[in-house]
Image (cartoon, rainbow, N blue to C red):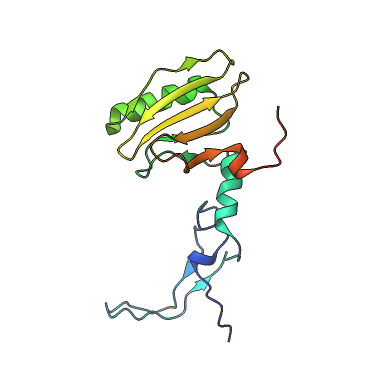
Length: 157
């Protein structure tokens, strides 16, 4: 009998949910009685791994959105350019009570967008070719997203 914890918390797919459908099977005839006791479940698609690394890679690849703030409604994607991101965040802001600023260009040819959520003030920056460079939490500068944080070996484009 293995003493290793097998479950959603240690599964490679926990954050991306790629293989959750049909994964967990409970024993035939099991009825939960509200006592906190569960029989061992069968995990058909379980794969041990670091789900945090997987979600970060998915964010870099653009196969998973990056959530801005803690509520989860405001999202961006590394494949979206500044115009699509602004349009998307404008809509989300209107629906959820955030404020999205105006997309503006700087003298270094970068484009900047500010979004105010219930958690903080965030600034998104794209390079001249429309590639997302950073998401900065202006109230908590040590937090945030940047290529340097997630992939220090990325080649400049």
